[in-house]
Image (cartoon, rainbow, N blue to C red; front, side, top):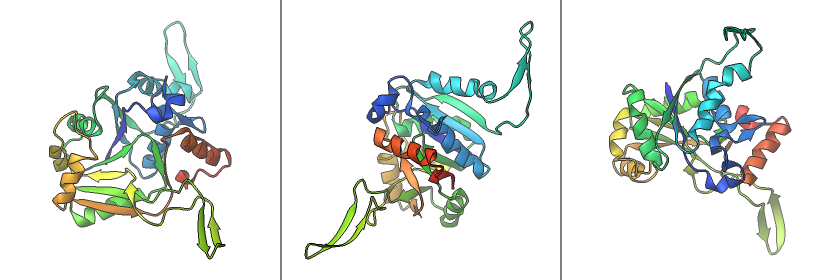
Length: 254
């Protein structure tokens, strides 16, 4: 199944890093978060990627153009430029890098990818969030209900510790627990091609009119994911993911 990854935003809330690179290229454990996301999809045998580019698209293009050389040992003949790689253990990824406009909204970016999707069901997510979601289960759930869109619903971790209090006595304390009430959009969509007709133009936000219309028409289903999920909106988020990696516990890889 083809995978669409939205990677064109400005990443203003992570401006400590995004002045010179797009947010999907901010590194966790020495690799861009975009790479971690693609690794998760490839774990479930999805190798056909369509990256919707925008802000500083050249950085992402250069990463993939140079990926093989920078991650391999090789011999180069400087006389004729021929390169002999010493290993054939390369990624199976096929990556379409598509400029979708600098100021295009998320819906418009998805719409611009349409010519590359062959009118097929596709997977869609954001280029700044990782999860250990079981993609096989997600796809099976989508096929079971027959609606246009499946959205992954998640409960994010609270930013602060949670106290259970009775008569000023603390009965329990949980440091940054997973929220128990309320589900939010966690990305990791499964989308039927007919849904793209709900997107009007470049100014359309995917999360507003198109999904709201799908919900009104009964064409939007939620797959509830109770496992790990973390977006990288701020430096705090980035540091938390980096800490997990450094401690050998990257929960999105489990």
